Image (tube, rainbow, N blue to C red; front, side, top):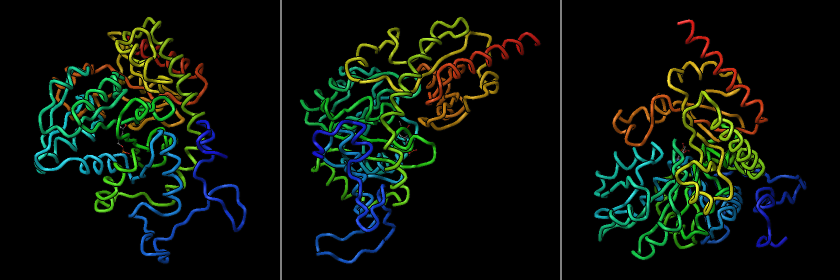
Length: 389
Ligand SMILES: *Cc1c(COP(=O)(O)O)cnc(C)c1O
């Protein structure tokens, strides 16, 4: 079939797959070789060159899902992010980043960049004017992440991409939270898309991986650094990721549906004081989200009413698991103050609007009634515990 015409779920299921010519098996065979005969001087296959049969096959699928020309798969999201940043930044360069970043990315910037003579500025107001103010003559990259963690703030992707183009600056986006199902930043003018494939692309909380998608030209520049940094993914895990992505479309659409239902239910609940979900009309960035997203994703945050203890509530949940990671088929919950944002000071958290009672929920594919029921029973138990005090 003409791959140009394939729809999303067909790309997920088929594009790039390796035909098993020998045994006619239904799925791509795994090639675990680290050593291949020289076909000719141009093609030296080697896992750290990102060009084994399985790596190449999956890269095609991921590139197509994000509407890019080419992609590389990495051993983790951070391997993809660090390699890509260092491919476009050198001593004397400057990067503008939004403040609300994945913690690992913020650590990379704060702990490594100065050593390498790379300057950086954070933007607190996530508007294109906010980014514009921080641009300097040596600014080479603008880096965004939307929706962000944990309050699901939205950055106007096209506005930032346009601003960057006017100033000849490369744009990068961490598209992990949205996944390619809900948002394709390349269509909106972004140059480079990054993913922690550990999250929605993997989707089952059992794979650590990353991906970068861009034009052939940019990907070649990234590859030159990638082979030196050596962050490729094992072919077995590449194969696992190919299998996982077959269901990406149906998983995330179910997660979108569940999260929207849950967000609306929580918003009406008398024991919930705040809900953060970009698909709610009450979300401050709802209009931007509506413009640039196809679905609003499976991530949401909420606060329990004053007097209801968030840690106790979390312990009383029976179906929703406490877990650091996100985006699996099972629903998971965490307290940003105690986990993902524990390293920030109290003031830094307050600046980002992260209260101690905030809970971040990664909505899975379960039946939504079972999720609301679990939350309801946990709230009731916490109320009884508070009364006993
Ligand atoms: C998890 C995550 C990362 C880092 O990915 P790893 O696979 O853990 O290295 C980067 N960005 C976002 C938004 C994430 O959620």
